[in-house]
Length: 503
Image (cartoon, rainbow, N blue to C red; front, side, top):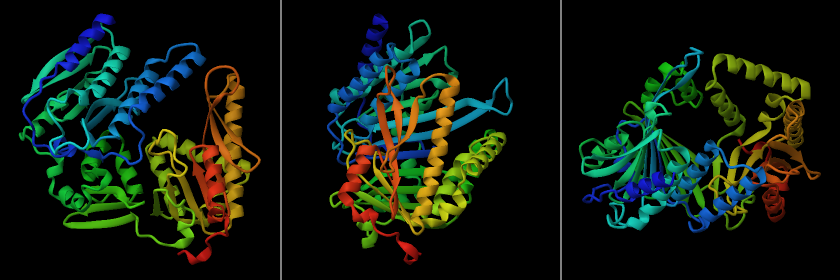
């Protein structure tokens, strides 16, 4: 492995540095025929990157020592993906699904396995540089990406099964790794296109990105409708999502038995041709705007309004927190969310899940459609207080408004959680092994998940956590964070339910 590691590293750092490209943002390098694309810009309030590797490394070492064995390949790959994610969210980036197909498995014609997957990841190597992504000669900006790739290559491959080749596309040099143990579509390639690091999955994807950079193929940023939809907020949005709705439906439905179309229909998107969502900050408040094209018509949906000023709602937000107030009636949104997950399953799995859910409600004496959903309000609040130590983007505090009957809501939540807890305990008892997670409830009514760390006792990570107050169903990333928030806000969440004044 030492020779392979050395050869890999030499190949990685020997990438050629061609003349400057004209790309002003990562989306300028994404092929226009991409099915979907996530565009991100640096998130605010993130800790310095230098602290991140040490944190991940500490968690890795603790988990490995307690388990008494090294991590398996899947866990190692997950760790490298987390490292790459931590690097990416501090820079402008784009993640594009260009194509995907599947085919029936040999043993089960109804099941599908991936037959073709084409993904491109484009990341600005150094944030805050010129529009073309940074200096061509700034090797230090690319080294963190190359180091993560090197570790993943060393952990996942061996010299007997893998081949690493230096290739050229347009005027750029890149590396391509193939492993004979993996399917043909799993080719991985990486390299630099001026100030951008480009990582691709799938054969011929890296050359396709290079063709866009060289002006030989159109970029997704040049699509007329996307360009018009993006323009008002293109420089301020922290996250953008672009979806070619009909292309997704046409490409995926044939081998997913129509599930892609069903998923889109659940969200009332199936009749649109293109969709664009933008999320960003206006002061402390987040905006979330969706735009959808049908023919020559564009429909706009404002999900989170930064100018929302209802004092009853704002009282639940700490004074210095960044926040979002979503206008998404939870009584409709939650059923939509779970229906969307359900339609992604096969017909047999859907029927089994629906039957099991009905049995659970009958056995434990609760009815979500009667005692929970009708009592929820139309506002969902997210904020970042208290902040997570690692500033994880999704580690926020969430409040779902209760419009009426908070006692019925609390009783239903407790009944559902008790059913979940009983199921976990029964599974652990049948297996004879400690479960990987437990559901626990403290005397103050706070429920939380506790994940086990291998080793003696039940030392583990606690969270997320949730509880019901007279006004909100409140969730946060740990029991301690939830209690700290409740102690600080007080009557802002413990006052009477909003009542019928909220339409």
